[in-house]
Image (cartoon, rainbow, N blue to C red; front, side, top):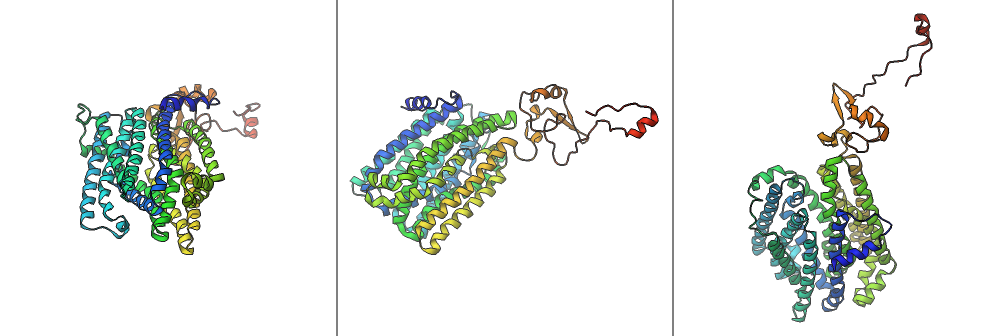
Length: 508
C-alpha cells in the first residue's frame, strides 16, 4: 500500500526531477502517514457520535499534559541520535534517553499516587494512566530516531499505521462497553503497543553496538541537548499543547473538545507529515552541511514543495470547513469546523516551517532556537489572552493563529539563513577544516593556488560554489580579520614625469 501511494504521488509530480533516496524516504514515511490518517478519517465520524464534546475535551487535556511531560522525560537526548558518526555512541544516546524516560515516568507515578493537581482534576482516575503514556511516548520517539538512523523508514511508517488502527479500534470497543473514558484508555493502549513493537524491532540483545560508550560519556558528549534543546522543545511543546488546556480552563471542557478535534482533523495530520519529512531531512541536511558548509539548495527545494502540498489541503479547509465537518461529523460539531476555517491560513506557514526546523540544530545554534521558542510561546499566550479578556473564544482562536504564524514565519527566515550562510559567524569558519580553501595567516586572507585557478568557474577547489566575495578572497572573512590589498599603489603623474617613468598603465 505504501509503495503504491508513493508511486501514485510521484506520477503526479512529473514537473520535478525523479526522487532520489531522500525523496523515497520522505514518500515512505508520508505514505504511512497518509494511511494512518485515512484510518482515522474512517473511525473519527464514528467516535464523534459515540463520545461527547466534553469527553473529547478530557482526552485532549490528557494528551496535552502527557505530550509535554514526554518531551521533558528524555532530556531531548533522542534528538542527538542521528548526529554521531559512530553507531556505538548513537546507541548509548538511545539507551540514555530510554532510561531517563523510565525514571521520569516512575517519579511522576509516585507523585500522582500521592497528589493529583487541580489541573488534572477533570481527568479523575484517568490521571493515573499518565506515567505509562509518558514512558511509552518518550520511548517510541527515541526508537523512531534510532530506526531512522538505521534507514528503517518502512518499519517506522508501518508502525504508525498499526498504532492508529489499535488506538481507534480500542476507543470504539470501550465505548460499546459503556465506559466514558474509552478515548483515554484507547490512546494509552495504542502507545503501549507501539512501544512493544519498536522494542521487538530494535532487539535489545544486540551485541557489539553499545559496548564502547557508557551512558555517562553520552551524556557529557551531548550536554547541549538538556541545556539548550530541552528548554527549547519544552517551550515549543507548551506553545503547541497549552491552547487546549487554556480553552478548558476559560471556556469549559466542551470548547476544549471542539478545539482539540479541530486540531486533530487539520493540525495533527500536517504536523505528522512535517515531522516525517524532518526525520528524513535531518540526516541528509546534516551530511550535506558537514561536507559543504551549507544546504540551501536542499532547503529551498523542500520548502517550495511543502508550500504546494499544504496550500491544496488548507485551501479546501478554508473554503468549506464548517460544511464538511457538519456533514461528516454531525451537526453538533459545526463549531469545530468554524475553528478549522479560522486557523487554515495560519497553519500553512507552521506546516512548512516545522518540516525544516532542525536547521538550527544542524548549524549548532541551539541558543537561537531557544530564544525563538520563548518568542513563540509569548506570542501564543498573548493571542489566547485576548479572548479570555473579552470572554470570546473566537478572539482566542484568531489570536492563537496570528501569534503562531508570526513566530513560524520568523523561524523559516532564520532556518534559511542557517542553510545558506551557516551559523552566522562567518562563511569560512562554518566550513569543515578539510573543505576550507583559504588560510588565515598574520591577519591576511591568502587564497590558495587551486582556488585562484577555479575562480573563473565560480567554484572552489572542492567543487563547491563560492560565497560572494572578491576573486582573491573565496569567503567573507570574520569581522576582526582585515583584508590586505597587496596591489601596488598608483604613482602620481608628477612623480612619473620627474623620474621619467612614461605613461602609467591601467591598474587592474
